[in-house]
Amino acid sequence: MKSSNKHNNYDNIIIYQYFLNYSDNLKDLCDLEMKSIFGFIPRNKFFTTSIYIDPSRSIFIKGCLAILYLENSLEDLERAIRNDQLFYEDYKIRFIKLDDDVKYEDRLKALRAIGFAIEGNFALHNPSIKLALTKINKKWIFGHYIKNDSTWIDRKQKPFNYSYALDNKIAKTLINIAIGNNFNLNVVDPCCGIGTVIIEGRYMGVDIKGFDVNQNVVNKCNKNLKFFGFNDNVKNKNILDITNLYDVAIVDLPYGKFSKTSLKEQTLIIKKTKQIARKAIIVSMDDMSELINACGFTIIEKCFVQKRDKFSRYITNCY
Ligand SMILES: C[S@@+](CC[C@H](N)C(=O)[O-])C[C@H]1O[C@@H](n2cnc3c(N)ncnc32)[C@H](O)[C@@H]1O
Image (cartoon, rainbow, N blue to C red; front, side, top):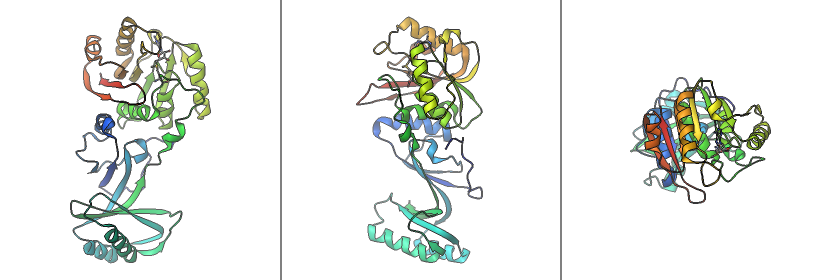
């Protein structure tokens, strides 16, 4: 992707149908991200909005349907497509199954009917146009389908990894919570470890700088960045010595359990974060709301990410 919010080819389309996927333990994190990107928390795992964002930006968005037709019946949809003489070369249509009331045979029948209504050629392999059909709340919806490319999976394996490193899916979500839809913000990860957050941010085209107090970790982080084709420009610096001002800081606090730290050090880090950034996303092992408030922040929202395999995290969005 390497671009920001990829410009879409659907400028004349005004409504988009998004399809979400998340496990129960990540529901609150998904809500936080959706609120940052779309400005609201969807009530279901599918929702419509006039805002287009590239589905690949979020680990929670399976895909997005740029709606061309929304009709009361399949017959109405067929008629509308025929009337418009809709024409596509090399297209493929898939059915997005949500309602159990469309049985397998009916889904096939519907796909065939729409296929006959469209003029042009169907392509089974490597279609240039991807279309989708679905039925939601008794309405038949048809349009262009933009699928999540799921490339974060390719960045899971880095040359250097640590037990304390964030899961890159969480890191990607933190970037979205940090920037919303503003790709012009300057972001900092002042305790960047081996660079999981920086890699996800840079992949999305975000201007994100990184620092870490540990030279050995910095060397590994820079090797990781280079491996993915990014500038190996993370600096060895104590957050307390940072003098620049940033729009947002994403701070994955050092945890006493895995690296040497103390509540006093964590307090200094949070206090300093308040001085160097207008807004912060603070990741911690414990609920640090009181301390975060005491350090001068106002908490906008927070969530708890329960993990079975690794340790769980609190994520606090504050300014
Ligand atoms: C929890 S780890 C960050 C992990 C990171 N998010 C990742 O996925 O690789 C915290 C990091 O903070 C660094 N650190 C601790 N105290 C610091 C300080 N005062 N200034 C800058 N970095 C610090 C540690 O060296 C450690 O790499």
